[in-house]
Image (cartoon, rainbow, N blue to C red):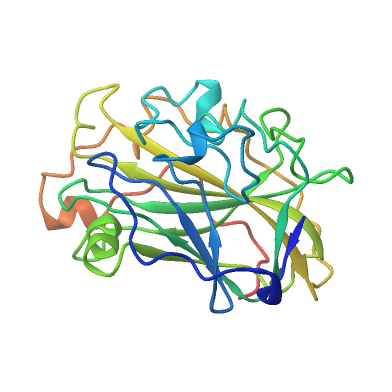
Length: 251
C-alpha cells in the first residue's frame, strides 16, 4: 500500500497517553498526517493494522540492552507489517515523527539512521543483519538536551532526507536515547522507532551501509555510559553513539 495525500484521512487531534515515556502514533509528510503505531489500540487489533511505523512495545517502554535484537526497531524487529506498505517522500524533504508525549528531564540526544531496503521492499525485511545502516542526522546538547526541546515544542522531530540519496525504498531508524539514569552501566534507555518510506526524485548516492543494529552500540560506549548531570561543559562535549553522520550527504 502506498500512501498519498488524496488517500489519507486527517488524524484525530487527541492521542491517548499510555505511559510516561512515549511512542510515535503519527508521522507527517508534506503537511499530511499518517498513522504511526498507536500502542493503545494497534497492538490489540486483529488483524494487525498496516502501519508505516513498525510495532512498538505495548507499554511504550524502552530497550535497555543495546546488543539485543530489539535495538533495531523495538519489538518491530520481530513483528513486521502484515503486508506491503510505504509512504512517499521527496528527496530533500522532511519526515516528522510526532510523539504522543515525552517527559522533560529524560535528557538525551535524538539520532536518525536510514537503510536501503532490498528489492523486495521494506515490509518483509528486519534490517538486523549485515551493516545496512548509515547515520543521517543527530541532535545533541546545545544548552538544552534535544529531548527537552522536543518535549517543549509539540513532541515533534523533523528527520531530514538527504536530497542526493537514490530513489527507492528505505527504512528510517529514529531514536531517542534517555540518559537520566545512564551514569551506571545498563541505565541508558533506548527508544528506537522504524519508519518505512519510499524516496522519490532522488540523486545518485546509493549508501554503503556501515552500521549494524544490533552491533553498533555497546553498554560501555562513551555516549551510552554517560552522566548528564556533570554540568554544561561536560554536556557540550558529549558525543552520541553510532559514529559521525555519513559522509557525502546533501541536505
